[in-house]
Every structure is written in structure tokens, then in C-alpha cells.
Amino acid sequence: MTRTPVNVTVTGAAGQIGYALLFRIASGQLLGADVPVKLRLLEITPALKAAEGTAMELDDCAFPLLQGIEITDDPNVAFDGANVALLVGARPRTKGMERGDLLEANGGIFKPQGKAINDHAADDIKVLVVGNPANTNALIAQAAAPDVPAERFTAMTRLDHNRALTQLAKKTGSTVADIKRLTIWGNHSATQYPDIFHATVAGKNAAEVVGDEKWLAEDFIPTVAKRGAAIIEARGASSAASAANAAIDHVHTWVNGTAEGDWTSMGIPSDGSYGVPEGIISSFPVTTKDGKYEIVQGLEINDFSRARIDASVKELSEEREAVRGLGLI
Ligand SMILES: NC(=O)C1=CN([C@@H]2O[C@H](COP(=O)(O)OP(=O)(O)OC[C@H]3O[C@@H](n4cnc5c(N)ncnc54)[C@H](O)[C@@H]3O)[C@@H](O)[C@H]2O)C=CC1
Ligand SMILES: O=C([O-])CC(=O)C(=O)O
Picture 1: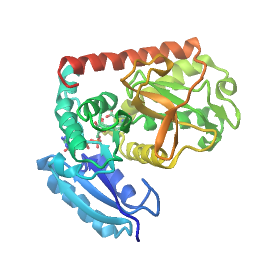
Picture 2: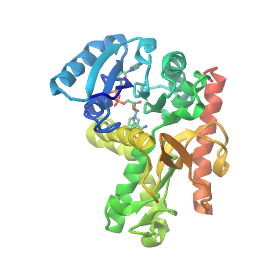
Picture 3: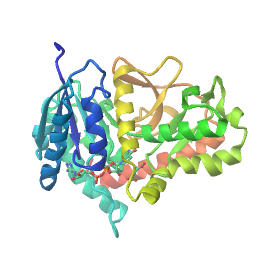
């Protein structure tokens, strides 16, 4: 194989998403079946041994595309020469923790990681933040990396997008392959807004096919927005395989492009489009091509959508104010 390997850094590598993610990266599903990869696994010191166990299993898969694995607890080493960074490791909310405490604890993780990306990553670095609160963690990392173009920092709403695809397919008796142009707007949180007004089901307008605004407001939107909590309730642990799958989808689409006539959802720094305040990392409909993304422009936003987009964006603006107040950005 003559192609130069792509350096992929995964943080939180010993966690449950890491375990579902690393094998798929190493098998070529992240970047393509002809792209060799080198993995860098970043973990906190007490979890290094567990990361080594995962690395042993990766070795035992003998993936032809996997050209090396390095394990470290030092972000400066982990992001050295990184082309793609998947920031999965985060501080979960524990009992009695206020939202401000959560943002502060995550600031302690994402600020130094952003700085290490700034100082050591490759010029073409692409960053996906998965660890929650993903949008605002991405903002913290981005603010600590002033030399990296801001648009390289993205947050994951692809899991929400995929969840919405399946719910809509079930409702309309179609398959996910029939559905195009669905959008997740806003925050990866319970305020997110899955929008089907521009989506199509087998070429027909999805909202017209559904023809049931009550179902939209009372069933579809809450089911998608609260799916993470429903998984925790059912599984006794948060989404891991589906989150890893969405991370693979996000980066694969970013690198390889969206299909003609379709788009996807990504949490990206707002340029002010659709009245979303500039700078916050909010989910938008985007097309991708040649490793770059663009916000889909010119969509008409009805009152139903406007109120919901505004509510989620308001939450993101408040999170930005909170991390500003903590000196994290
Ligand atoms: N954006 C999205 O759609 C989704 C986001 N998530 C979030 O992804 C994150 C990870 O989830 P899981 O893998 O299930 O959690 P987990 O708790 O199983 O694993 C997290 C790992 O991160 C590591 N870690 C903590 N601080 C670190 C640091 N400073 N550097 C490197 N590693 C560090 C921990 O040691 C642990 O191994 C959580 O924040 C979760 O809420 C989960 C599902 C969907
Ligand atoms: O709340 C969590 O940790 C899991 C999550 O983000 C999701 O499943 O959407």
C-alpha cells in the first residue's frame, strides 16, 4: 500500500463508544477501504491499561489498513500530526452536579485538548466532538485553537439525524433509503429540532405524506429528542454502538461528500445563516464535497420550525454565555 496513512486520534478510547468505534475505523469504514490509518488513543492515566487491552484486540484483528496504534495520556502526543480527531472522552454529569459544574469540568478537558490540537495537529485537521455537551465542548476546543480554521471544529448531531430517519421511515411505511433532506437544527440536547418540512419520502414532501402536525409535535420530535434518555432507561447505559456509527457517518460524509440531491446534519460554527447567532456551534443542514461543508441556503422556515429552532439556539447561546463567564472561551 503506497498511500500515506491518515492519523486518527480518538479520545476516551477505553470507553464504551471507543470500543464500538475503533474497530470500524481500523477496518476502513471511517475514511474508505483504500485508506491506511494510524490510531492514537488518548485516555486518562487510570484508563491506559484498559486502552491497551483494546489495542491488543485491534492487533488481533490483523486489519490490513491499520498501520500503528499509539496509546497515551498526553494530549500533546495524542494530537501530534493528527488529521482527524474524534473527541469522545468527556466528564459525564453525576448526581448533584449543576449544568455550570458540568461545563466547567468539561472545560478542563476540552480547553487543553483544543490547545494541543492548535499546537500539534496537521494542517488539514478535522475535529468531531462527540462528548457531551457536544456543541459547547466543541466551542471550548475551538476557542483554544485560534490557529486552526474555526470551521474544522464540529459537533455530532448525526445520531439525532439517523434516529429521525428511522422514526420517519416507520411512520410512512418506507425505508430510510427513501428519505432525503431531513435536518436536525440546534443543540444535541432535548431542545434539538428534527425538521421534516423540507424532507422527502420517495420524492414526495415528507410533511405532506405524514399530514399530521400533532404526531410531529407530540410524538416524532420528543421521540427523537429524548431518544438518548430512552436508551439509557432501556439498556442501563447510554447509546454506544449507534453513537459510534454516527461518528463514522459524520466523518465519512464530511470527507467523502453528500449524495446528489441530499444533505446531512452537522453541528458547525454558525455564520449567521437562518438567524442563528454567529459563532455558536449549532446543527444545520449541510452538503459536503471535497472535504468541505456548506450550509444549505434558501430554505423557507415556517412558524412551527422557527419557534423550535429559536428555542434550541437560545439554549446554545446561554451555554456560550456560561462558558464565557467561566473564562473557558
Ligand atoms: N453527541 C452524541 O450524539 C452522543 C454523545 N455521547 C457522549 O459521548 C461521551 C462518551 O460516551 P461513552 O463512551 O459512553 O462514555 P464512557 O464513560 O464509557 O467513556 C468515556 C471515556 O472517556 C475517558 N476520558 C475522560 N476524560 C478524558 C480525557 N480528559 N482525555 C481522554 N479520555 C478521557 C474516560 O476515561 C472513559 O474511558 C459522553 O459524554 C456521552 O454523553 C454519547 C452518545 C451520543
Ligand atoms: O446522554 C447521553 O450521554 C447519550 C446521548 O447523548 C445520546 O444518546 O444522544
